Length: 167
Length: 276
Image: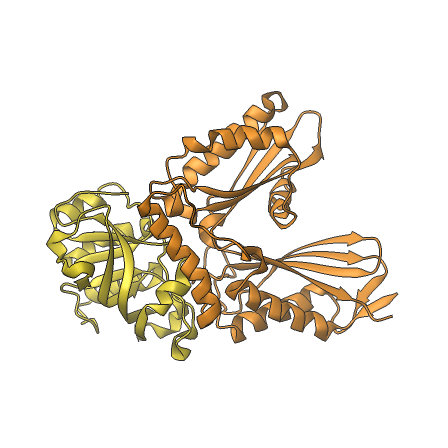
């Protein structure tokens, strides 16, 4: 993942606005539940989880026309899956709002990162995507897993790798 | 009796719901950037302003949550319609076509527990009122889940008066914080009954109601108690607009409802003149 002003993950400070460029994997309620099942059954996932950045989001359908909107959903509901995703090697989480009690601690301990995206800025975030493709559970519609590439995607750093928290 | 063609209603609603998701009349002339903001808040507000511009120019929905479809209908007593046995049928045909052809996300699930998404964004949530004359008027509203989840209703004791309502509005806004995507457009309704007051709180937004200066000032004076601004981060802009509507009620009651609407406020009206 690339950050604005040439910063690295370790240099990010909670409270800052940063712009990221790179690959994100979208997950949310239904898709995470299914992934938990797959991993439990020892199946391999079609994306690299080590070092991955996960975006809790569900886009609109216009991606084949390059007219999709995408934005964060409430992280609270996905909080309980964060320890599982960290175990798979996920490094960054992007969503909206607070996390449930105990989860910020887990993120801190593992030197992972939590970012908040601007709720409802769907059109703007959509325009900062260079490509988007469904890679799992296409039948779930907006809740499918998408691999997306973003450029200068503005986020607020909420938990940095030193464990500082801004919310 | 005058008749509005059913096809006109379907087409009209289809176009209205597409427009609401890309360039709603309710956001015309709105800017979220304010001089009194610090540079961090201004940066976030600037992205929201840019978001409205991008939606219009690149034809991307304002928000990925294209909401539930709500329709408030006023139908003149001398008006009827052709093409279907109920208005619901025509309205839902228009909504379904809007969400399909408009590349909008369908978020309505049929059963609250099974949560099966049938991919039509139906049913639409409809309110119908009869009026005099021969005009058929429909207000469409696109309501996202985030801000709907932090809206609230309370049966307040009449002795608590305006102070009691102001406390409730502030408490609702404090609990909401960033969850519903502020700056909020806030619709407050006081009076009516347990079932009607939330509907009136939404109507207060459509009508830009300003019916009680004293209550409005009480609330605005206390807005700085909220320690958040754009999107719930530190700042000053938690509330963009505040609307207040009053309704007659029972001697023992003072129901109040607070409808919170996110920065992507999406509503608009369409009128059908019937053919003589």
